[in-house]
Amino acid sequence: GQGSPPLLLFFLSFAMVAIEKGGGGGSHGIPEGQLLGTLALVGLIYFTAAGGAYGSESVINSVGPLPVIIGHAIFPFCWSLPIGLATVELATAYPTDGGVAVWAALAFNEFWGFMGGYFSLVEGVVNLAVFPTVTLDYILVLFDAELDPVSSWFGKAAISCLVVLLNMQGVNFVGRSSYLLSILINIPLIILCILAVIRVKDYSPWMDSRQNDYDTNWTFFLGILVFNLSGYDNVGSVAGQVKKTGETITKRLITPIIVG
Image (tube, rainbow, N blue to C red; front, side):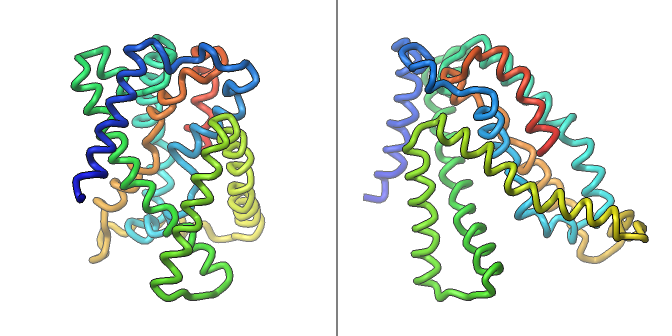
C-alpha cells in the first residue's frame, strides 16, 4: 500500500539504532584492507557535501558574480567548518556507523535516535532523486539531444541502477571511486580558471552585483549556498569503517571544505 515506503524507512532507521545498542556497526571484524583510508575518505566527504560546481550555474544569474565569489570564499568557514569540527568530535568519541541516529540516541534516547535516522533517510531519498535528472540533463546537453518523457524516465532509472551497483561494491570502493571522480570533474574547472587568467583582460564583470535588478533572488542564492556547503556531518555514517578514525577524519575533513 501507500504506507509501505515510510514504514520501510522507519524499520531501517530503527535498525541503525539497534545496531549501535547491540555493539555492532563499528570497525570490529572488518579486515584492515577494507577500511577507509585517507584518499577514500576525502572522496566520500567531498561528494557527500560539495560534489563540484555543477548545477550551480543559475546562482550567478540570481545575484551576480561578486556575491557568489564572496559567499563561497567566506561561508565554508562560517558554516561548513563548525559542522565539520562537531562531526569530528562526535565521530572520534563514538567511532561507529550510524551518524546522527547514534548520536541522538546516545544524547537523548532511542526514540530520537530513531527519528534522526528516519529523517536522514527521508532527506536522502528526496535529495538523491534530483541527481539522476541533473546527470541526464548534462548528457543531453553534451550530445545536443532530446528525449521524450518515457525515454527520459528510463534514462534516469538506468543512471540510478548504475549508482546502486557501484554502492553494492562496498564503501571502500565507493570512496576510492569518489576520489578519482572528484579529480576528473574538477579538471575542466581548473582549465577554465587558467584560461580565464590568461585570456580575460577586463575583470570588471566579475565585480557586478544585481542588487537593484527586478529578478534578483537573494533567497535562492542563500538557499543554494547552504545546500551546497552542507552535508559534512554525514561522514559520521561511516566513522566505524575508517582507519584511525580520530586522526584520519580530523586531518582530511578540511581538504573537501576548501576544495568544495
